[in-house]
Length: 572
Image 1: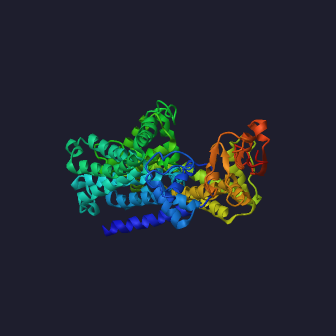
Image 2: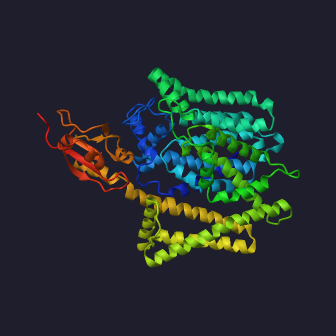
Image 3: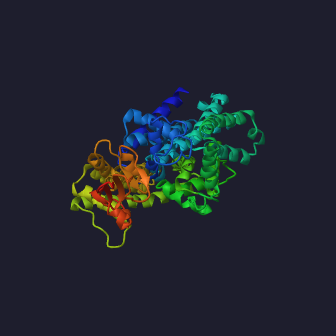
């Protein structure tokens, strides 16, 4: 027990340090989570049970994330870091849980690679930097699934560290995690662990365990924890609260029919498959080696923890794929079990270096084949960055580029122009990873190849999320414009927004910008209005004549400049 706690703490500290270098204080732009930050304002105002998005309706899921974010704001102030902290901590805790469980269930080396692949996967890092509840859901679904695996594992298959852990304690941990998962994102907090454990028990034909008292009590207790908020919400909001939570924001998202649901994130069944493969890069390239290693064979059965992880991934993936509403972030809880499988495959490949059996030789070949393109990519990246630093610019290709890609190249060019030490360090790290991979490929040294791949993943993560993304946010945020508005407005004056306000503009404004939906010149016309310049120019000429632009932002995105309008004179 003591060893498990120490491993958990060490992994958590490493994950926190890694996430801390990925620009957690970067400005917000138009990301969805910032649109929901008004709920944190409402929690701080005392509306704890049913906070509202300001401006906007009641929150659409239970408010655990906004409760935790409000505590972070109390400690850190109204800052980007405070809003991101719950998600960052959730991501770090998920990695730590994977590592601690892996040391007990599949071995320390496999546990290390499982946590490393999860932490450096593109999709997981991106979600960890978003101020939303999805990373907390992934954390609690992961902890519940891991605790259930240990509780349900056959006694003769347990590692020594887990053998002495009372099943009642493991069930209690699972129940608490299920309850917190429900408080983070509703019914998914209980459905996802149930999908993992249920599919595992079904495929193993353990019918008696499905209806065991321990499992029933676990899910009942977890459900009771989560339902406590729904009961409190119903006492405060009545039937309208239930209609909003259950029909509009739950049923209509799974089967998007009727008002508000039709077409909501509607995608085909296979939608998540390419996104999972892309989001798990560069570790996706190791999945063929995992398939070879885990292919059915008479001489070797898949270990129970890995079979459970496969069921865990399949249960979550099939559940979300069967939903008609498929928003991309939904699939985040499927990445922890995928990382466990990848970590196990890396460990198996390293153990197969001797190539004593046909399976081991094929596993080693697939592992080597996956590392070859990464070696080329790392060396090419190092040469390209080195050339850019030497030239002091990044040459723009002549072919058409997406505006976001072009802006990323321009930002890299700006770093190169001033010979930024961070960019030089990235170029050196890419060169080092490419060299490690190349030497490993030449010498058939799988351990050196794996280390080179890990260094590449860490370097690429820092380059994109620690350098490019924060610098891009600095160019695309309305943070400066919001502060300029605050300086211009007279003391006690408030501004409204023509239409729904931009998420970052609302976050950085001292008070929420209430929406209006047309300019007007009557006696009750607002004195100050913030609007997109295009919307202002599209207003009726008579209404537009009543206002004069006194402040204009840069065109930070495709919506163009924003303007602060002042009423020329109040009629009457």
